[in-house]
Image (cartoon, rainbow, N blue to C red; front, side, top):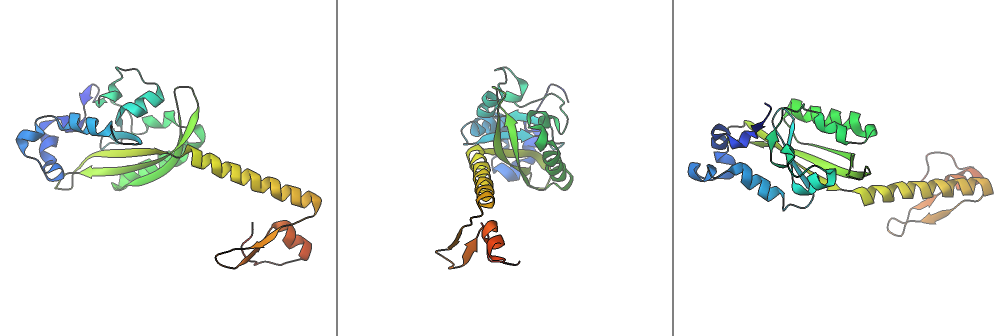
Length: 212
């Protein structure tokens, strides 16, 4: 497999894409692979391709720059260098390896789409959160041609969630230490809600209306 082009570059796979792309044989010979790479490079988000075995063989220019890959790196051009199905896991935060490997292996085993959130290391060594979605691209006869994936940057959302949880924890600690609580009413549902400390002060028992 080392040094081979993506499956789309072979005539056999190009012919198999007849029902997928809706173009004639003469047009397919103009390089479907190059067309896909060109399209990927203008799509918002981080786009990647993997061969049916799961090995990553292409990331578009935005992803390659984010990772700090050299300008002549094979993966920028869709060159299959014989990587393992999970070789990309090394680019992720260690805490995200297990779940990402589980989701990806399920995709490969079932041939179905999958989605997982993970942190990817950038050129500065920092990790940013991404939501990754992988979809199988099949020929008209159902044959799996390759996997197409898009990673959407959700780092700001994730950081906001962490900050919100931290603020709630600080508020709960402050209320517990000062023996004060908080309560309110949802403007839409008109349901009452209260903090854990309020429940303790008034001796409420579970179950209770939605808590904060």
